[in-house]
Length: 82
Image (cartoon, rainbow, N blue to C red; front, side):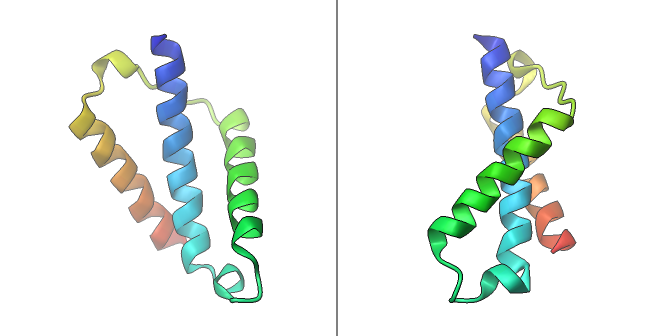
């Protein structure tokens, strides 16, 4: 169960970074691109990066506050990259 929680937290971190990146990317900011396409691209790219990126997150040592801070950190990185 803890391994699944760690993978879920890792996916949330990758998804947050990619989502924040796509939010500020000019091409995906256009209104001509449907929301479903934006969401699908974000999820597919996040799954791709999750499979090639080794994440070593021990979910038993991560509190709720630390998880929120980790996800906020990923959002900041994504916004800065975009």
